[in-house]
Image 1 (cartoon, rainbow, N blue to C red):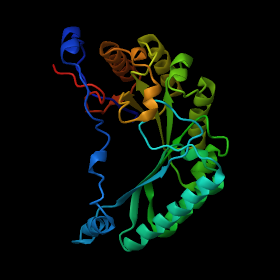
Image 2: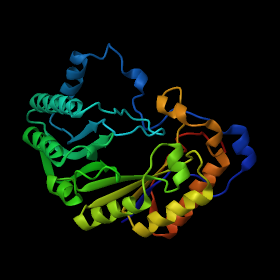
Image 3: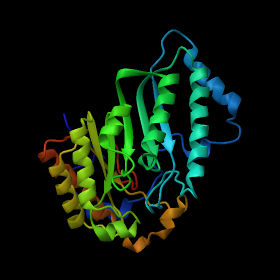
Length: 307
């Protein structure tokens, strides 16, 4: 069944309430918040926390997250840790430490290494070469038990897939492709410094489908600078035709005081709250008509609407 990740909202817009009570709150995707990462949470505390998994007879399977922070350019909208490497030596050093971390965690969790979910995020995981990614996967398999029917995801940048092929990723063991689209309009892309042609993106989706990925998820963002309801509708219709299994629709969260790259975005270029909600309701209507099931249950992750 195809599915759609969306914040849930009523089917009508009350403009007066939006103007009176629209506001911002912290990103619900960050839990715990970054303010909880303090020096008091040292290595001993972390090991004690991991040790709690070994108490009792019931143990839940593990889910692993691997962060590849490297990008060739800085996207202004991004909230996540990203690094523009000076040269290949920076990437090699990071991967050496990553392999060491995998071995350390595997050693500590001996007898408790059953993994059902694996997620490679970034940054840009597909910036790495086929050999580099394959080596990481091999290190994980040597230290953890990846179950046969597990969900093994990788974020794919359609602009940075030149060193890899979709069949190669599938052969490594990835079965879940996540492809960022954001918006196809060139002015929107220029305003967030994320130039990505429609042709390359749609080809990446098609190639992932032909390679036999079990699930293909597309990520769209509404509320981006220079974005309008009409531009968003164009992107939405193109994605519906591409027919991915899942669509994750995110509301752009503008927090330049926390995320330095966002300071390059002009506040006056952002669509107002009413336009954002029009985009959201349009997405709910069009995607539901296209056969997607709305399974998201969260309010807007950039604005609180009080009804």
